[in-house]
Amino acid sequence: MRAWQVERRRRTRHLIELGGLVAKAGIVELTNDDRAIIYGALLWIAAKLQSHEGEHARELWVAKGKQAFNAEGIEQQKEERT
Image 1 (cartoon, rainbow, N blue to C red):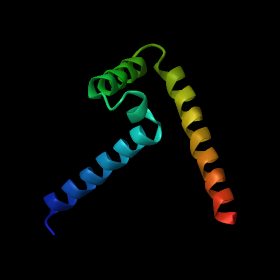
Image 2: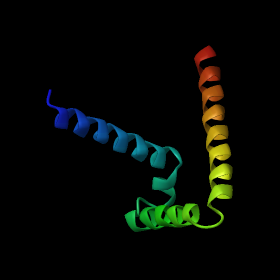
Image 3: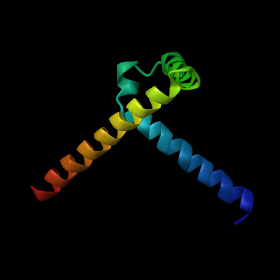
């Protein structure tokens, strides 16, 4: 397989995974799949990260994300036991 094909597949997989996070967070349903709302929210996040509050926001969001991933993992383990 050519290098550009490998890179294109890698990029496609990455974009699919990012889209999965948007869906997993419930954003698609909460916005009624309104792309303008979703894009606006992402722009707001980018602006927040670039501001003087960026580091604080990053720390809060990392903690929240890790908490959610951990809770999901615990829930999956419970389901596997039953």
